[in-house]
Amino acid sequence: MGATTGKLTGGQPTIARLFHWVNIISLFGTIASGLQIYNANPVFGGREGIHIPWLITLGGWLAGGRNWHFALMWVYGLNLLGYGIYVFWTKRWRDRFVSDKDIKALQASSNPKRRQYAWHRIVYTSIIPILILAIATGLSMYQPVQFYWLASLFGDWQSLRTIHFMTVPLVLLYTLIHSTLALGIGDGKIATAFLKLKSSDL
Amino acid sequence: MSDKEILADSSRISRRQLFQWAGAGLLVNVAGTLLYDPIGRISMPINEAFEALLLSSQPTPEFPITAIEPERLIVNSFRGIPSIDLANFQLTISGEVDRPLALKMADIQQLPFTSMVIRQVCVEGWAAIVQWGGIRLRDLLTLAQPRSGAKYVYFKSADGYYESWDLASVVHPQTLLAYQMNGKDLPAENGAPLRLAAPIKLGYKQSKWVTEVVVTSQLLPKRGYWEDLGYEWFGGL
Image 1 (cartoon, rainbow over the protein chains, first blue to last red):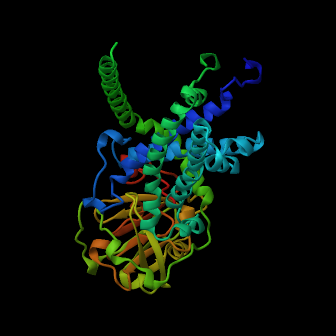
Image 2: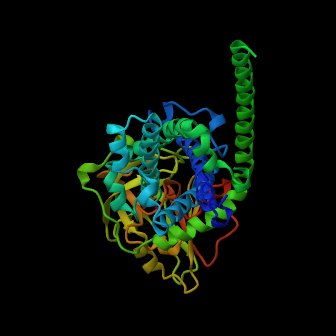
Image 3: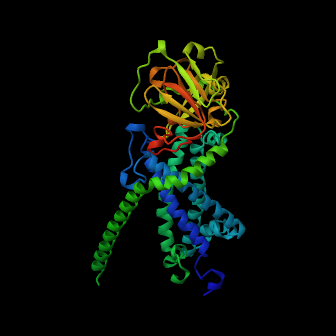
């Protein structure tokens, strides 16, 4: 196998797997600590509103949740930025995301594997705007005065909070569909390609 | 194995996996509570430096007066409303200043009046657009003349609440000691006779019932009621 190039047949470069893992861990950490912050004054219904069960929160109380949230935001944001630079630098953006070929495949191809692959490319491309939306709305709430121009894009405070919160169910729904599809394609080769930490495991 | 056995087998594995996941979740949850303080010790200085870097000395955009949201402003205090004898009320400015002051409300109302309509943002996640009217802290400090080493300002309140701010935020043109709210005299529950109001800081930085302003050259071990319990000190917006 072509281990010298850092790429394996059906595998992903180590750096892509690293971006993937750091994203998963920091994203779920920001979600859990975000739900802890949410509980201080629920987006829906205020103090009398529906609270999140403590088991899926992180930090123990508001200050703890904020410590985790505002620490992991750097890991999450810088990882995503690094990934963005990597995608452009290596020109991965040209053939790694959904393209008109996938749309054509869905319209014309009768090969079920090609069709499933096309669907999956649509699905995993959709996470990019969701991840960016989480940062844009988060930054708007963290520094609403210094980034007032950004915050004003999302309407009033309640809609800003709601949009920021909605990235959570979107990510969870995405994770469900993406992992199901990734495990289903080529007997799980896509999932293995991104999740295995060591090339030799493939 | 028959199909039935395979099914039974896979469901047993998934139940075991479920317990493993719940156990891992519980472990992460407990670790998250135990470790929030060391995590904050790493991240808070970074975030505070970031917020201080972003802070501009220019006024921030305001809202039209029609945008005020009195129904959204939640009253928070840590031990209720203190009783204040207005007839003998004095605001003192002391510490690293050349001219310590003691002002009565009548003196304060002689100083230039500033009104602003800004968003009050609470650490809990809610926010409300409020009109505040009062005097600028920078005008008060101009009178008191801080010494060259002055870097921080402490605010002490009638209820025992205490806060400390960086000097740059204190002299921001929209940092007020307010005695008016939403076009009326400041209500007691919102901090009458005098409270801090600024668009650039989270709500817990904006002390109510302020009686003492103390200019210092350094931060003391006690930095603020909530900060000493774990909140970030800078609290910039």
